[in-house]
Image (cartoon, rainbow, N blue to C red):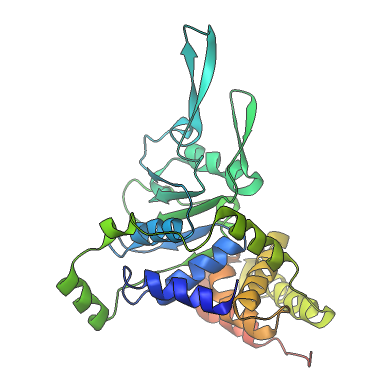
Length: 307
């Protein structure tokens, strides 16, 4: 994929998500890194529009689940129904059998239902009634949660948070962007008529090419210096896991690829770490309110050696 194509996709989707270029770019990086995305934001800021737009430009199937306290794992995975004519049970796939799944307000679902997503996100498969079913490829979960602690929410456990490659916020649009929305109205319906920019084959090929982006010994050491700094920090209860380390590498590779390079550089890490590290590490209670500042200080304190 050429850098120009990513810019073209971002510019195109910006017509429907005014002033959200950064969120679009980060979503594309997460997708092509074969990860999953958690969006923490207030309702009504374009999360659903973003998910639909990404699905349509990439030519992929799209499903949506509204999480509630009575949502069951079978509502996401599917259910076996008895067929009288065949005298056997038949599995009816749930919305998780789409290429892109939007789970809205995931923290309103019970822990049992949240855990039903763990196998799907980690192994790209689900198990129902003792049978394992492979999910379609590519497979991408976009989950949203409200930042406010509200009645009827169940905080995501660390094991679930660690499954999300990035955690981002869309934020309010700029005044000018919101003015365009007022004048033009919602364009979400138009999204369903979008012609794909890529085919599934193109997407899988690009994801394979990204794997080949080169990581030098010095870049590996730089990344490990950051990782170990989180593990040894006096501000943290626990640092980055190995999955977190791989998240830094995979997103850096994708960003390098989007920039037209076949190798990663420190700037790739510095551009993305704030969306990868904070939700994966546990802060000591007295430092909970300074998460971003602490992570920034840790990363910026790591010296960059000449490549």
